[in-house]
Image (tube, rainbow, N blue to C red):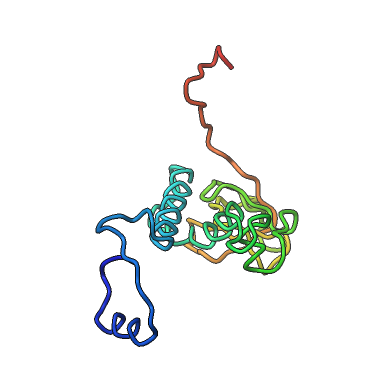
Amino acid sequence: MDNETSSLLETYFKKKDITPEYVAPGDHRTLLAERAIRTAKNHIISILSGADEDFPQSLWDESLPYAEITLNLLRGFFDDHSISAYQGITGHAYDISSYPLCVFGTKALAFNAPNERGSWDHHGTPVFYLGPSILHYRTHSVYVPTTRSRDSLNNNLAFYHRKLLLPGSSLGDR
């Protein structure tokens, strides 16, 4: 435990005959909760860093469901490290073919169905990818900048990933 306990908690420990173990002040590496918080923060920062440069940073909170899915896919389950944390929590493995993943904040073009557009309107709307819609088969949650809609769903997207250069390699090296 950290050194920030209340007298109420200490009284409870004495009643239950529990001997707490405290860590040194400022040491956040030994506490599992502190380490999990640091991992989650770093994961969210890396997700937002990978988003398109035009993605509105004010929508950082939209990355939380995506971060929860991807982080739990990357980590082993606490009780059984042979399965992912996602599988341990939900009871089933993540189905990538039913819920495809893309890079959060990627620019995309969402297809507008013919019955939803005029005969001379554009066939697509520029959007940003927010994550999979777990309630819908092969459907993506997107942000539509023109309408500022955060809860739009679409199952037909064309992704426009930004071009990333590999560090330390020039065009001639590649």
